Length: 202
Image 1 (cartoon, rainbow, N blue to C red):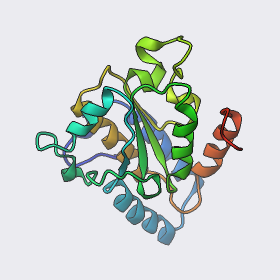
Image 2 (cartoon, one colour):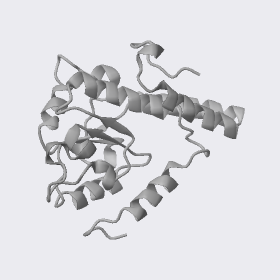
Image 3 (cartoon, rainbow, N blue to C red):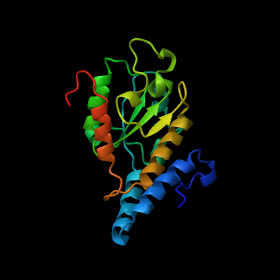
């Protein structure tokens, strides 16, 4: 099963093996015909209307803002409804540096996102600490405090790279089983319990 979009041929994607692994895992578990069809319909709708949470802490945020302008126009993908409330957002694009004082806030926002929820670590700071690596005040990647679905390198990444990362997230959503199967929530809860943060009640 090739998971792609109309605007890009299958061969142009960089991590097809990962997506194919997800498809194989879901197919091995088997699916009811009716439930499988509902899965496809629901995941098609979800993957084509991904609403981001506006959460930018430094220079990557400026690049993300440009996605809404006419040159890049994220409205053509159905992503233009950037929400200020986590309860109305589908995913959190962590665009910028997360300092240790900000970590509890980032975790709280993640907890308040509506299920199913996703995270894109955008830029070198969010991926690994960036130029502040091993400093006393910066979290060495947002993956240390919340589970990340897509990593986007760059300092800062270009808007085209951000579009690519959200398209990768959409492809991942298309192959997930909405009813039963792989339970993302259990994995997320296990991750959060194994990564406690001072100031967050478990």
